Structures are given as structure tokens and as C-alpha cells.
Length: 383
Image (cartoon, rainbow, N blue to C red; front, side, top):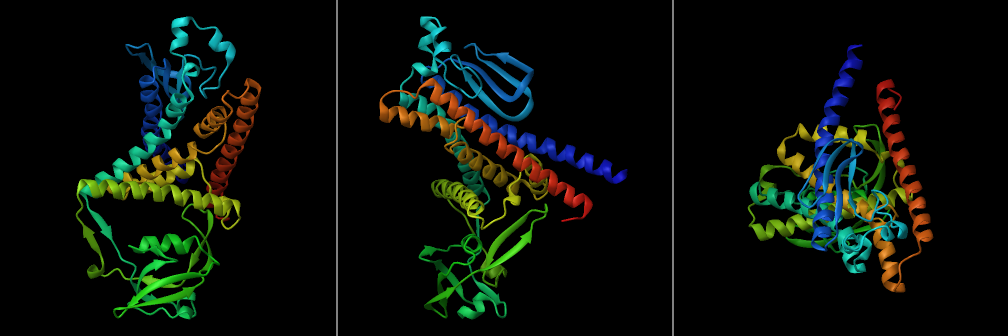
């Protein structure tokens, strides 16, 4: 009973912390839609954090209802001519508006204006991520651990390639390596692929070829994942670690780079799952996100802000996937309209939204099933 009570308490604490983080990220996303919609003259009926019945809310001077709802896993901005929170178009809804209301209808705006409103949500997430990274870079500094080799594992790909302690890896396949994390990212996603390493040894530049081996492991949450390894240990002695003080312009540029890196890592991870180089078991939903949020929070403010930035960048990216119901699906229809010089038919859009909703629901069920099974494996010791 005590263990069950402890688990229940942990889930409650994890959940509250995760919902606070998610609410911030969702608020910024929807605020992007809202601000650009207002700028384009679109009448906004509702700004909602969460779905379902309202907990509390209020009207602003423009008549927009700001509300918090009971299901806090997302949010939406609803325009005057929307049929539903996913901004599905309906000719009947638009025809039912008065001339003055029609002037503020989302569908009455140009394709460019509608695309700007839709893209503003993900773009706001990218801005939040960049601002957080830039603020940390400017205040805390940038900690850099160059890719020095401290030790080489016997019979490893690195040993076979001729790596030696003291080597500094400066590039892989022509891509510059500034820090050890760059090396880990590329090698980790390249299991079975032959890579060319540019190495500096005793002032001389060498080219070494190594093929990362496949290492199958389970993370702290019981999820199976595969990564590439070449068999080297990094040097962590104080003389190898550098903390750079950077100005605001450079901090911003680094923040943009970190946001971009988050997106490319996620895209690479999805591709690895699709091509079966990684197990789909590592995909998680709210439970996994809550657990990670709680663990990161224990590490301090810096890691927590970086985690928020990571979540924000990825929510922005995932919303741009070309799936109807998501922002990317809307942009796909607007691209079609721009090319054909006429909007997609109501039937085409309805079919698209139905397919998109089905895909999204299957994904939600899948990641939540993964979460539940991983919790079960941990509780029963079967994984």
C-alpha cells in the first residue's frame, strides 16, 4: 500500500509540473495564432487553454472569450467562422454571418494572410525556444567540451580505425565538430554507416574511417532504443572544458542553432523509427513527458529551461507536419489553393480532416499504450 501511495503521489507531482510546462508552451503557440489573426483583422471568438468544459474565463474588450478548460492537453484559438476548434472551413457557417461579421471572418482573408495566421503558432514556439536558449547563453555562458579522446575501447570500431588517446575529432564527413555532443549526435544516429573522421593528433590532421556498431539499450523509463557507438571515452578534465562568455547577438545565433538542432534530431528520430533503425517503443506520451519533466526539474533551473525550450521547438515542428487537423495540414490546403487559384472543396477538406483526425488518434492511442506498458514493466519487473 505504501508503494502504491508513493507512486500515486509521484504521478500527481509529475503531472502538475508537466501541465505547468505544457500550459506555457501551448499558451505561446496559441498566442502566436491570436496575435497574427488580430493583426490580419480576423475576429477571434475564443482563446482556450485546454479542451472540454470551462473552468473559468473572461471576455476582453474585443469580445474574445479567454478560457481555461478541464482537459489541459492542448488549446485552440477559434475564429468567428470556425465550425470547430480545429478551424475547419464551412461555407454554411460563413453564409450565416452578417456583412460586418463576414469582414472579420478568417476565410474572407487572402491565402497569404491565412497561411501567416496558421504558421504563427509553430513560429511562436520556435521563438520561445530561441529566446530561452539565447537567455541562458547570454547569462550562464556556453559550456564547451571539445571532442577529445580520453580512452579507446579494445576491439571497438575506434580501435580498429586507429584512434588513440589524445586525439581531437574536428569533423565527421565534413561536418564540423565543435563539442563532444556533436560527435555523440552524429555517431549515435549512424549505426552501421561508415563515417570519415577528421582527427588532429600531435598537430597533424588525419582522416580515419570507422563504422559505428549497433548498441541496444533501455532508457530509465524502460523504453528500448538503438544507438551507434565507436568505442571511445571523452576527456572531461577541467583543462579540456571551456565556458565561453558571449554577447547577445552571438547568444541569439547560438539559440537559433540549438532550436534547429532540436528539430533535426526529432526529424532524424522519426525517420529512424519509420525505417526501423529505432524501436517505436521509445515513442512516449504525457506520462513519459511528465516523468522526464520531473527528473529534469530536480537538476536545476538551467536544465529545466532548456527542457522547456526543447519541448517548445518540438511542438512547433510536430504541428507543421502535413497532417490535416494540425497546422501543417492547413498550410497544405492553402498551398493547394495558391497553386489552383481556388480553395479545395468542402468535401475534400472534410475527408482530409477525417483522415488526419484518424491518424492523430491512432498516434495518441499508440504513444499512450507505450506509456502504460512501460509503467507496467517497471512495476512488475518484466522489462
